[in-house]
Length: 179
Image 1: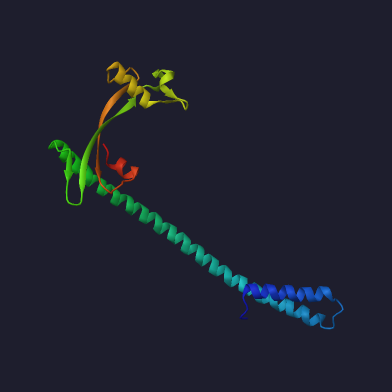
Image 2: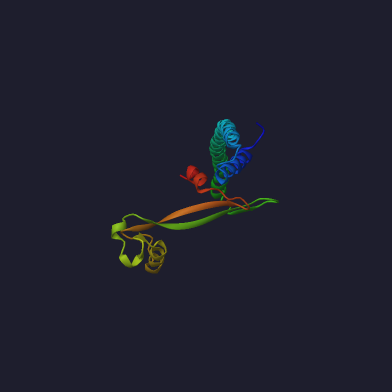
């Protein structure tokens, strides 16, 4: 009973070919008994292999659960790091510091603006992209041309972002901290 499943299959196929090629073989009954024995041994191997398969699948499931937990922990760590960076940015802003160039770390507060559409139905069609979504760049450019920060359908919102050279945060971490 030291044969592998592959060996059992191979032996079974060989003996089956022997029986089919010479049905009048004087050892026909012995070959049939051997086939039955191989079948029995294969069924035991298959049953035992089933336990191995279930064990492997249980390990895979456990690894997926651990991966989910590690992912959640990684997101929590990213949120903490982004919160610290956000505090530095707020302090820099209140102290009117736009850039800190340290030996290793460089912090820079980047001020920017974005267009926020308040009423999508009122946005003129020529200022919309093909995907029934307002083209914020066109709206912003039109606001510049007209010298205004507000239309009936959109307005400019002041924003800031803080960056740390060599560090990239996931959007999830940023959203958890952003106010």
